[in-house]
Length: 291
Image (cartoon, rainbow, N blue to C red; front, top):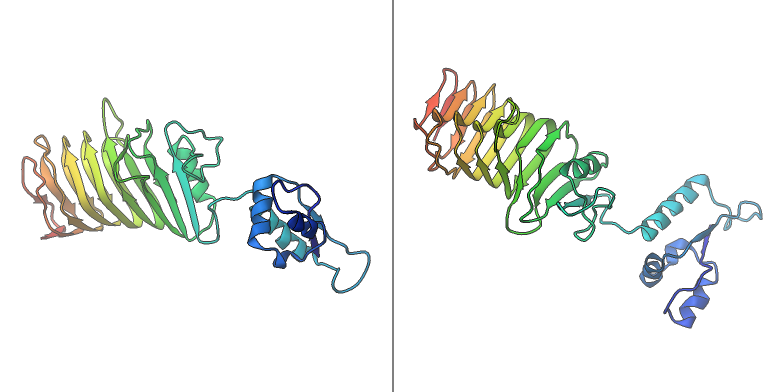
């Protein structure tokens, strides 16, 4: 198995070009050569001589496959490795972009989610452009396997029409997202943040406004911290259906809401924060609120 480059290499030194004209084992290529290949856009020829004999020249199909994978990653550099995948989203982006850098973002959250769902890496992160507003809900369903994180590219917020997590076993971490509800909405969309049938969700430094129910946690484990909830019209925080929810430093004014915390067959722990509604606390039989 050998590697052979046959085209010009731009501004590389003549000595390097001469070296590239001679077959070299792939494993011995230096980072400067790999970088030159990645930046040149040149075609790479793989020499797989299975006909001339000799242990040093014969290569198995598996070896060829491995080498071709390595070459493909050199020619198409991304931020993807076996551990991490970052996908960038901007309202001015394009879903035909690769989304793998801040300069080549995709346009929709839906596209970004399809990318992170299809790749099995240890840590997946979706970055929404700070200050952008997206005319869509942030909806995650059936997310399993490795962790997934959703945040913004800076310290500010990005806005979406609502947030919904459903039937997911992966650890989900979300921060600096503003869920704004406006106009007439369906029953599903009337909740600013919905967490249903999820194993482990952490929400931190988010804002929710204008929803019928600010936050719904159902049959899930969730941690809610530093969330500002305003103008919920029915319930501010509902925790139901055998859920475990910890709350810390929740704030906001909800003069139309019937209660701050509605707890049924579940447990809420933490601190009550400074969130307000018509009634301070209400919980149904079977629910426990421990502040």
